Image (cartoon, rainbow, N blue to C red; front, side, top):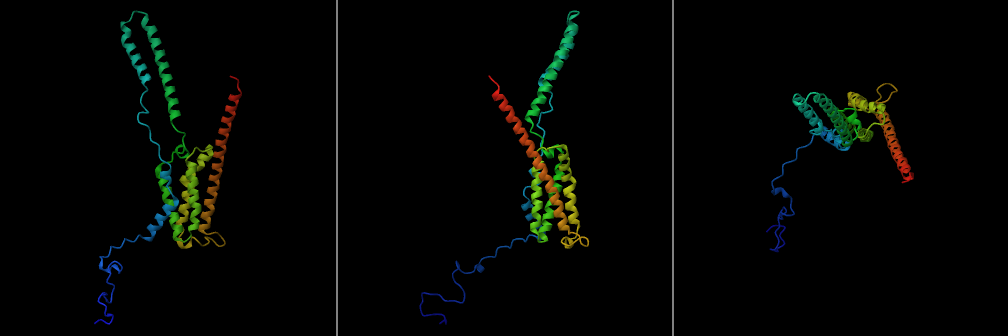
Length: 272
């Protein structure tokens, strides 16, 4: 008899668990282990997630509406009428063709001008106001390139163990998306936004990445600042200028609302 047997035949005694439901599942076929994600790829994924929606997707491109370049119907009708008048002129009594030709030409010109003016007004009313990035003609290639640089720098900061240093970069990206999503307050502001996307921010990010990772936290010159501190300073400068542009845009929007309020009040005071 087994040394564990207590003489009661109702129990089964053994050296290992005998209940398959509660015992280790060694009897089952082991599931294949999930493929490990390389650390660099995992950091890039985390960086993209922390940055949010890319600029290239935040600012969708506008497409031309089919048929917008067709010749307006009345203009075409006026042209056809003029041609028909020219064909019928030899068949008309003497003296009458000159009068009809002059009248037909004047009428055709008037119809064409009126229709073109009306079509231009309709297009202007239907088309939304151009946003900052549309006015600057920023192509999606430029935006994709900046998105890639932002992701690479945030991933580098995560690798260096300084996740807090990536927060100003995320905030700057959101500021830039907001500024490009509305018309710039002035031509100077529009020029700055374009250069910020094409040069200022990309140049700072690329210069940081060119510094060896092991030296980014060390002073670049005796008594100087580190690459990480210089990057933070440049990001703060760009962020301050974007905040100023946002303030000017808000002030302009407020002025437009005040003008509308004054207009409505003047209308309300007018009798009848």
